[in-house]
Image (spheres, rainbow, N blue to C red):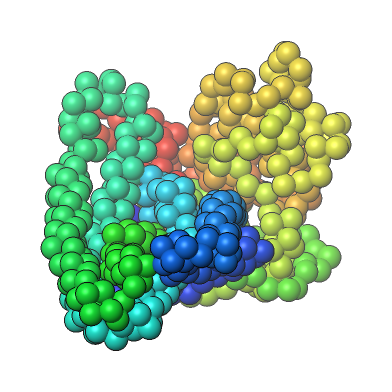
Length: 597
């Protein structure tokens, strides 16, 4: 898994362009709300740039005693237009940001789910959560910031034109200070972009550590290492503090620069206007308008804030694009022909973390056969099972089901053909019945659910619940074994050709495991069954055993034949501990790399 502090270091020009394209697609999702935002913001800016001229004209008219010429009414109308446009702009900004954020979260979540285990192999769950929640909110707000930032050029340009119309000397004076303002804003935007990207990466690292600590709370409590874990999770805080001080320095720098330059610019314009007033070139109302235009055109505070928000959105989009750039598993368009569920592995090579786990593996599993995958811990049983079920693709070689390469099958065709049961199943759905029927229409087929639950030895437990299969699964306290049996029932209820059990009985007692294994090997109809086996009794009940060893399949045959080999029997013997005293249980779980591959 990549360190969250390191992800994003490759965010060079290519990723910046990709992030900008993602932001553009995000803004488009707002649809009519984005259009309303543009129109209302434009109306607000137009009213804002007209007001100084209208107020100045109204002052000149009042001083001349012409109070009935409608200029005061026009000024009042412009103020009302400004207020209405501001209200509409706020409404449209909120709705467009919410719509864009929701689309971005859905798109990111859908892509993550297509990646499967590859997502958490590169990104930690905590880091992914910050990208999905906070990152999407930051990126989704880019529309509002971009609209106001783009329109912020209008007051500056309009101020120059208005000052020129009042007196060209005023415009010339104002333009003298504009290059410095531009350089200030450019430097600020560059500083903020780098700081925000660092801040989000460090934030992701803290979230990743926090989620890991939550997952290991019992271990931490048992080891008495709460203080050490807290220190580990919060280790990036000094860097976060450093970034925060960087924010403060960047904001202080641009504030100090603008606080020095903007008043000087306004004073200079007002001084020239005062000389113009004394010379009769400028009226009192025009001098009032010139003062307002100088302040309006030189106002960098709002522009700096908008640039900071855009930088935040671009940094968040860059981190989201890192996830979206991970290639999703591609599916074909073919459907499975009528067949028995024959599985074939042809010259399959699998690498995990750049280490070759299998090379040139060939295996044929006749349709309707039960095959046990047997091997020492770390031999790659779960990895091979994930390749057979196409949860991951081999680097080389092909896996076929009834003569069709798995990548050629459509998504529904593949997932409808292969059922899975895992060591730690996720119980998804609202009720217990829905958790069993996940991904199938079996929820409407109560008898089939009940039969599957009975085969998994969980039906009696469910019947004792307050509402049976309609009980909220989130409110049912269950042991590890009961959760595993729900997962097994889900696999048994699936009507595919192939059933894969990846260490799915590791938390069961011997009697329950025997009953489920008997149902699996004798009561699963004509389905092809692939079982990751740790117990000799499980392997003995299967038709065939594939013995994994030394990066390949050492031998395939019935358990009774292989049992005569001392090396095969040693697979089921307790392995000595590093200290030599004691041994692991024969049904010990495989190493973590196998489980999560």
